[in-house]
Every structure is written in structure tokens, then in C-alpha cells.
Length: 91
Image (cartoon, rainbow, N blue to C red; front, side, top):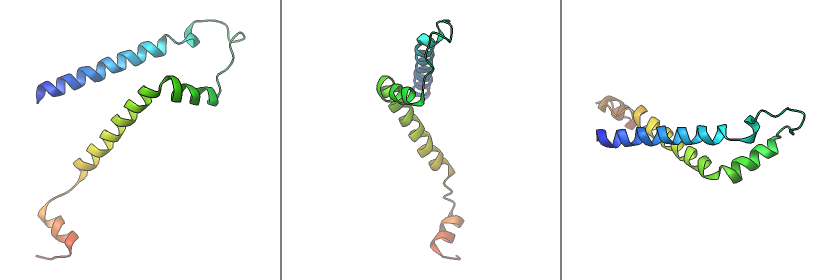
């Protein structure tokens, strides 16, 4: 079980490194003067997210969904007292 956890941690670390590399290679960081570049709009951002970064968006969505499901599982309270109270019994 610890091996699976280590593999998952290494995978997340590699994924973050790949994301950082891709973000830092963007032409926006090339150092050209702002007067020669056009300012990106929200439409450009949406097109970029949905076309160029589609796989990354899906992976992040899956990770967030797994985190939400895991959090809801951890919050559950299954003590007998609470289960009986939910069912309406006072025993």
C-alpha cells in the first residue's frame, strides 16, 4: 500500500513539473515589450483551456472529483448512536 502511495506522489510531482514547464515556455514570458503584444482576453483564455489544455483540464477535474468523493467519505459518521438517531429509534 505504501508503494502505491509513493507512486501516486511521484506521479503528482511529475505532473506539476510538466505543467510548470509548459506554462513557463509560453511566449507571454519571452520578455518582449507590452506594446508589441496584444492583451489576452477571456475568450482567448477559454479557447486555450478548452482546446490547447483539454487533457489537463480533464485530469484536474477528475482529481477534484476524487478529492470531493474522498472528503465526503471521510466526513461520514457511522457510529451506532447516530445511525439509530437517523432511523428514528431511541434504543
